[in-house]
Image (cartoon, rainbow, N blue to C red; front, side, top):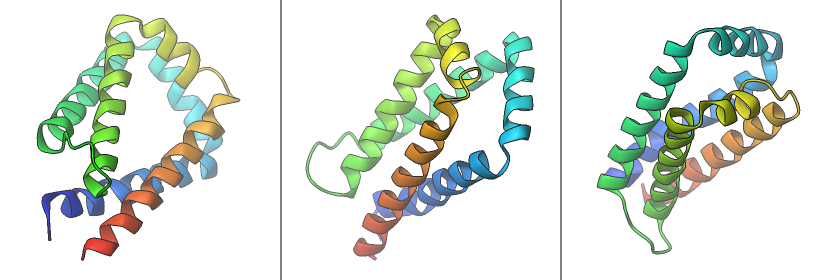
Length: 126
């Protein structure tokens, strides 16, 4: 099993479960978002964590060819972009990811689809 496949079996379920949880726990999600808005430290922890995940993925899989690795590369870059937004323009993050109720379902669907794609491609390698 390749390194990309191993990470696919970690990030695939993670994103899938996270997306499903976002739909199933809308009220709790909004409470958490409200708490995050009131706690600047939580915002920056999310930013630094996203940056760490993104840099790790990019350093392991900065591959731009049609394979599972491209999904890991894109995921890494998405985490880096998210981290930079959180760290340098947190008001954008707060508005989009923790405030807009209309954005939450879209973010959930993106996580579910990305998780399924990664799992599907990961299972093809095994």
